[in-house]
Length: 154
Image (cartoon, rainbow, N blue to C red; front, side, top):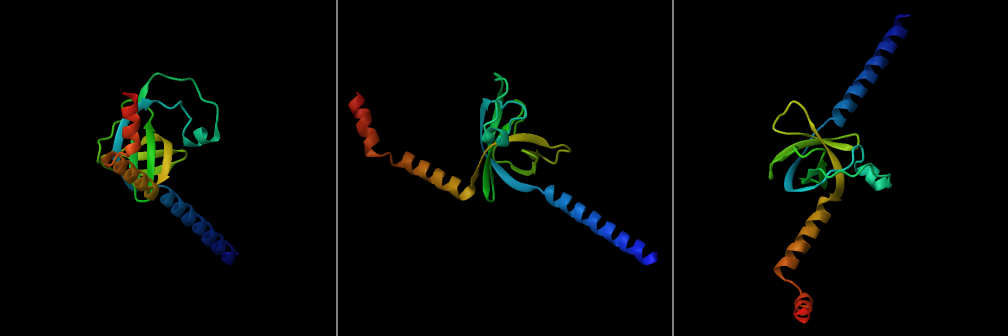
């Protein structure tokens, strides 16, 4: 009997450690920098990234505006939208964030609670940097075709 209960205790302890380990891994924070902010229409409630990508029916359209942020992490760039107009984050702030279901949970300035944001877009950082470089090149050296089109309009 003793060997059966010790085996059961070891099995139970192993499962408990595995669950605790997976909980800690799921809750680990990543670091990112906020590089852009603008005000946009708020996303309907409970319609985050997954609902938008699945083509789900949109809820009622509101006239409220919410902050939209571009968050750059090591490998991925996120465009996230606050759930209300008062979810403000200073630019160039390094923030800790993690995924929480279909949202991005962010801890600001060692706050006790997390702020939750809807994920609007995600792109690999390497692709985002290439797009940003292309935009900067276009701004520095506008093509002659654009100038010709502007001259013909006049």
